[in-house]
Image (cartoon, rainbow, N blue to C red):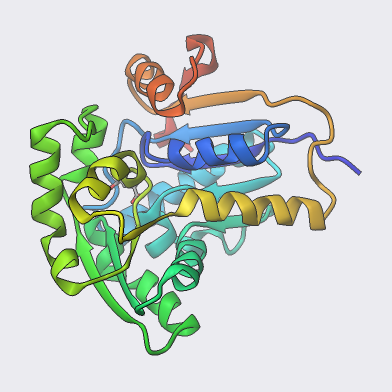
Length: 271
Ligand code: DGL
């Protein structure tokens, strides 16, 4: 059997493209419909109630495009609003549990640090998932509030002094804690990977939830025999504001030219 419907992915902005990048590598035949809530980013500084409201609207939009499964490529939604998916008629994938599993598999000294938005860190979801799998793990949680605006502004080069200084300030506690594994608990953060590794050194393994979740989705599609067996790979992008800047940034982040005809603006508030 084959299911030609697309995989739906949403995020608060363009950070979720780090997950799309991994999906493109792992599942090149699949069509992808991406929604980035560029008009309401960031989610991570908002109340749980508001994040849930936004997540429900994002999920409703993807359902209206007839997707076969939904991926919350947003650490914040995955941490505090996963229950919005309880009544979805299609399978739902969140990034937290996959990142926690990958971190537990990677750590040698049992010291795992988690960085994320304020809402993600406050929820302690990563820590809860890690301790379920490795009860004696030591977990440090650190919010990195300025990372998202930096990335959205296009400032992520590992040669940029402002980027390095910001990363270094936020990651000082991680360095002092002696973590050998760091979960990039926000989907914007893999974009800063090079700068983060420059500050922490090669001894710290960075966990990109996108890699872990792409493998899990591949397995799910195969086990349930709902992969797209035809070579298709069509990608459509929707945003809630500024499609032009999205085209520019997305092309850089995905490392491939995005056709502006494939990026459309939607009125998410009406869903
Ligand atoms: N993409 C969001 C996340 O993964 C971060 C940006 C935001 O605060 O909305 O947590």
